[in-house]
Image (tube, rainbow, N blue to C red; front, side, top):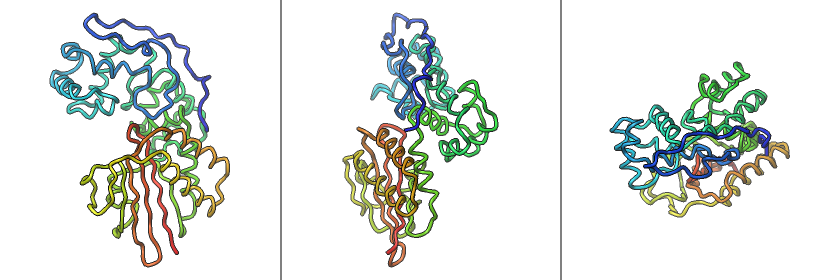
Length: 339
């Protein structure tokens, strides 16, 4: 799998003031350098202190950095369950990019994060090591790879190609066309790899003749449920990880238990194998891409559905999609078959 090596790890020493005596001490891992963020999460290990701060700081301390009504909402929400991600924090009423920045400032001032955490950029808490990897990726990949890494942000990809070299991740975050999804894609490509994106591009580049298949990594699940990748002749559905009564079609079979990594791998492997059969995809692209998929889904569980559509008497469409229940990873396959 393509990824940046550990040679990009920063040797920066982590320094910072300790927390006040009235507050919990940061965990030991926040005082030491951590490896690259190699899972699709929105808080780097070095930045976990931001979540510790918002979960444990007294009301009065949070009130030093945030408006009173925001603190009230955060404290009320954490009383029901601790925050586990920035997205979780951002879902609270009145929280947004400005409030996330204020939380970061508070966590830093109180000693919950140190210089090993660059900070929150586009709703992603980035470490020094992550930042170095992102800058290296943006400055060195060829144009084709940049567009593969940013399939839904072509304006952003063009901006990066035109303005590089960059010297900081902040400048990349501020570039036109770069937002939360694209910065996260860049971080994941730099740290996890982008072989799966290359495989997706290869599959989707095949001629759209019948029969055809697609492998898609960027989509809106609600739109899929409403038929975005099918048509208006749905004739069945089977879903995993959803509660009964929460789907648009009451006739679909619903399993409350989530789908497994084995289901996801099997579905993607079937689509890729057929794509290779009809289009002869490079063997290394398939091997690297499937290995990348295996890394991303190992040990995970997924919400997802298999949706079937009739397309005349001798053809049909089958759409399968899966959403990681604990990260931002998602994958969709589409078969347009004909007898």
